[in-house]
Length: 181
Image (cartoon, rainbow, N blue to C red):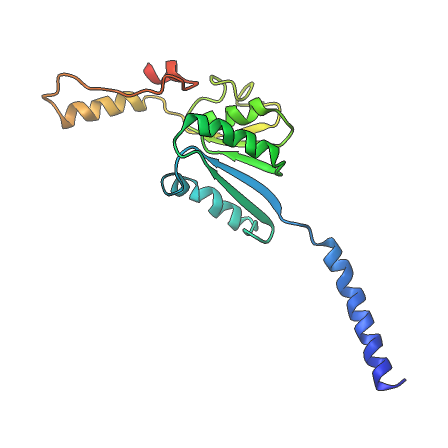
């Protein structure tokens, strides 16, 4: 066999070995991450999520592609974000607040939604129960418990002469009653 034919045969074998590998490679999964505020305010709170994804082998641009959408602190803009996220048909939607998760679930669809929230997901209507969330929504929330009482105690210690303390609530928050307890 001539040198040229041998090189062509080796090239064909090499290409034949490379093609199945290329065919097996999957396109990166698309994950839409929704933030209620601005990127510089909200992204640091989600760093643990991105770090854990990277630790588990989900490399940005390789096995996963993140699309970050920011609500810039506007409730009206947040509702539009949920619609944009659902329309783009990603593989997963990550909502960094319960308001965003509720907006996404109201859009319907079968895209899995993962929430990170300080609101009780059962109380706000995101899931049926903690043990069995049901549907396509799951996530984690930080149990506040007596955190409000501790905050007031700290204020009392720091400002013992204070006669009045103002508290600002979002009247449209899904868990307003719980926050006011």
